[in-house]
Length: 139
Image (tube, rainbow, N blue to C red; front, side):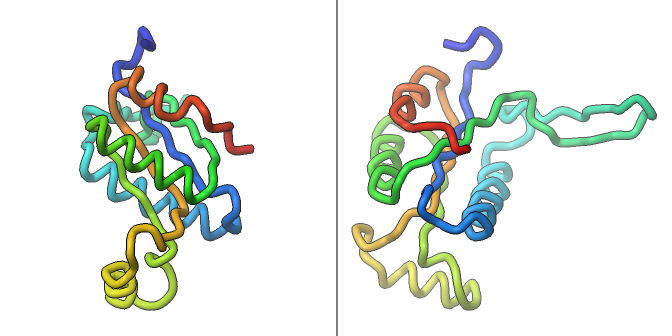
C-alpha cells in the first residue's frame, strides 16, 4: 500500500496503435472517467506558480501509463470488473465516422471482436497494483 494515496490511477494502452490515435483514446477515456470519479477522489489541486497564476485541476496522484496488447487489455478489463475496480475502456469501434455511427458499430460488434486501444483503472492501490503488475511502462 502506498502511504500517501489509498487509490491508484493507471492507464494501460495498446502498444500497437499509432501514437496520435492512442493519445486521442486516452484523452477520451480520461474526460469521461474524470467526470465520473470527481474532483475529490482524484485529488485535483490548483497549482499556483511563482507569478500567482493558477493551474487548476491537476491530480496530486501519480498516473502510470503502461502498455499491453488488445487481448491483455480485454482480460484486464474483465479482471477489474470482477474485482470491483472502476474502469473505462476505448475500442476500435469508437473511431471513424460520427459518434452515432461509432455507437452503432459498437452495438453490433461482439465483445471478442473488439480491439482494445486502452483502459483506465481507478481504485484500491493494492488491488490495482496486483492487476497491473505484469505490464511494462509506456516509453
